[in-house]
Length: 150
Image (cartoon, rainbow, N blue to C red; front, side, top):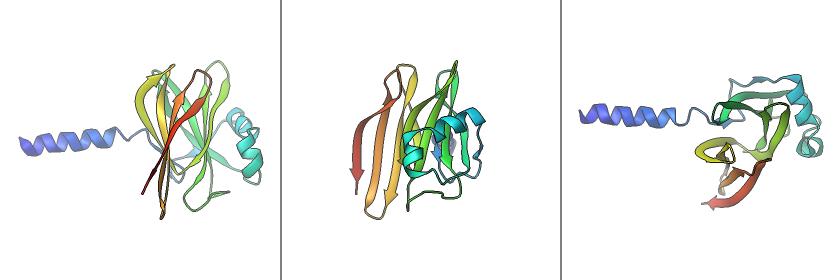
């Protein structure tokens, strides 16, 4: 019985990370042209990634019943050692950019604020790891605190 309980807890913990996003995820695919246009018009893209041709991403559930598209550049275009661009485009009546950030991965927290889950972007280097917590304010995600772990 104890082994069964441990197995169930382990399986549940694996399932809870099913919504994570990694910039090097091999399952990322090309995105709709409308989403690509929004990304290419963002200041983050124009300032740092305009030489990048291919934009890839995937749909992710960031709110109850609605999916958003999480986007990155492909083939390491414009990436640092452990960081690349991460954008989130909300798909509603019209597509809107709600996050422009840098990181290696994104984790979804099921805490809900103004209709969207809280998220965390992560960067890890030999000097430590940075976890940036984001909360939706009704228009876009805002950085709510930054934690540096050694």
